[in-house]
Amino acid sequence: MPTQRLDKELYRKAYESYRQSNEAELIEHARNAGKHSPEEAWQQFIDLVEFCWKIAPPPSEQQREQKLVGLDRYYERVQKMEARRRMRGKTS
Image (tube, rainbow, N blue to C red; front, side):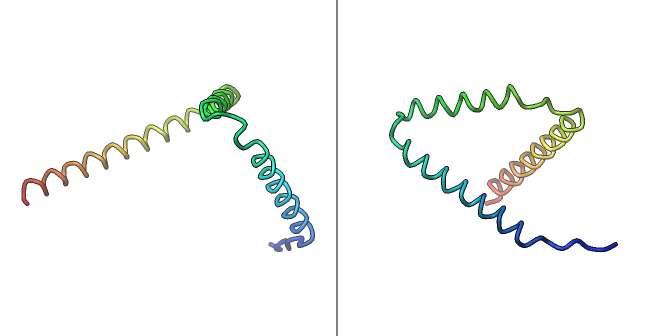
């Protein structure tokens, strides 16, 4: 199977575009610094999170199962850690 070569010029252009976008965003943040109180900024953040929750697609059944498996594994490890902590506390 032949390997594809990276188009270096295209990569440079994409990187420069990304850099300029980041720079513009930083300038915009600097311009808006101090315009909002901490409470207003927090409310904007909450509004953004709620908006993202509304437009995000619901998780698939597989994603839900993976999350439950991960949570089970997490709680199992926490229980083991607590049991070890209790045992060390009793022996010392």
